[in-house]
Length: 314
Image (cartoon, rainbow, N blue to C red; front, side, top):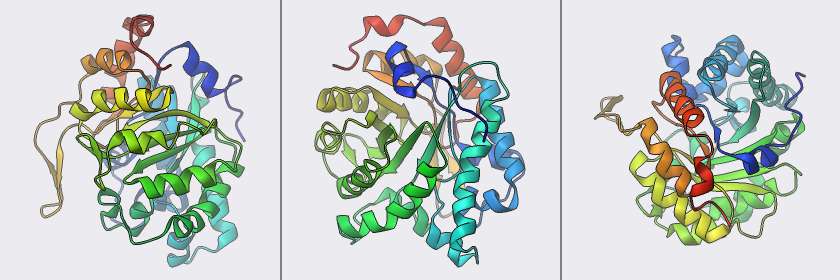
């Protein structure tokens, strides 16, 4: 496997803000990939790994310092439905990390790899990640997530990204399982205003991570850019840890037409407010592409050192 950076991600965060990548799915679609399958981008781990590596490479060349793997919607159950047995599924989980590592190795600077652990609702492929409250107990959610987290951890990423989490019960399950793996993790909720998608107050949701030493950042993703600053402040206040923010473009998905509508509001000038709120991992999610990440990276380079004047964690 391609070696990772020589220093831990947490150590790099202590030195300043790092730029995440953008939406993997929109970049894959821009490359001509069909993501209509229930496995979404995870299908390409088997059918088109070169496309995934190319998408990661586009973000590395745009200036991303942390790549998130194509495992968001991957699960053993999902692979089984496609006729992929458990041993092969483990290889596909490992491949997701290796493809990101290969792309990271294309530049002469440190680029970290975070293995994406999406919510249970992403795997059901019915939009449940934007509702939460699946009717499952915390123990049942632990049993679902453990095999995929173990497979990803065995592949040796720099961190686990517990992302697009819609409610507190799932966050509790993810943190319990991820805590067994010995890897740094970040916890990122999808939110609507000041609450999780399931309706819980963010202060309550973020506070779960306070006692978990393996958690290096807490925050939000797959949300409106306008929600990110307040969420970052709430995350820092509740945990004393750095915040992570990677919102969507600001456009809205219309399920009836199967298209994005509205105007993009993701702009690099939001970086200053995010950093002052305590964000140290910043990037984009749905509909945020390499051009937006390049602009964000340029803004970060131009404002290096500004974080010292912000609130920051602690």
